[in-house]
Image (cartoon, helix red, strand yellow):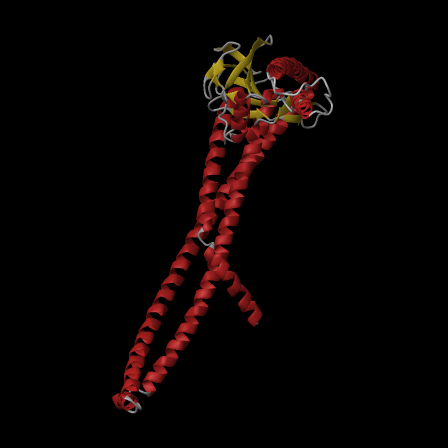
Length: 446
């Protein structure tokens, strides 16, 4: 029995220290929930434009998938809040238990002092206690003891009252948290019901798409061709930039080597390297320097001071890069994607971002130089070099920069084109480290 009481009491000490943490967690959860609600509202507005059309498309399915994903995230935040409330209620119960135990102990101790005072209530007893002292100093100590004893009893009363107030406060907090839990449970039920509706809506779209699998296959084939053409264009631009940087590095290395050779010939004090080039210190040093120059670098796009600084700054801004469009919603994530209940799959080279309408401003996500502006037949595309990092913005209805232009973070570079359904705007945003595609999602600000 004693172990059952002691273990909770040991845990309470730690629980009391972190008792303020739920408020911080609640604030973070509320911020996360508001962000999800904002994105849900935006994608719902875009989906309403295509909802109910007779022609079902891959774009509709992508929007529904994104809505469901956001709805599940929203329910997840509610579940986190419920766990936080349950933890808070549990910790509060432990605190009330500890305070009640403390109050029982205080009452017991106070009762003993009352009984003792009652038995020794005569003034004669107090005077006898003082005057029976063996010396004057001892009498002074006894007077001080009686005063401290009286103060101790007053402190006991004060502590008992404070403990009772704390218990009442904790109980009020319990009621508040239980009310919050009821509200969260109601919200959870509502959101789960909405998720079920969305999944039924998605199943209906998937069913219709499956019945038109050949048409859907054509849409996917068209997308794959666009992605392939875009990827080839970007890869050619990146390789051209690498070759240009390589040629520049070679020219600088040759110039340095020739300068070193001229300096050697003009220095009469330096021993001749022709007598014994393999053993003289001067020759050895020169050979070492030449080897350093001719050694292949890890990246030709990370050699000069400007590129090094740009690469370092770009890397440091991971998860803080601004979005290429305002009020955009990701409808198709990076990497492999599969259409439910079909064998149709495809890879997305970047992020497909829907916008409320076509023609909205598309902005550079970081400082850089425009490496290419090109037409893919159904829309324009821009590739910007940020050192060894490259960002591409495609499906543009127009551009406002030219090749070779220097751009700044947040600068408008073009306008979004129409989506596949022709009811809103859409761009494809691609991020590459030299010739390697990477997921842009972790790099963008959230």
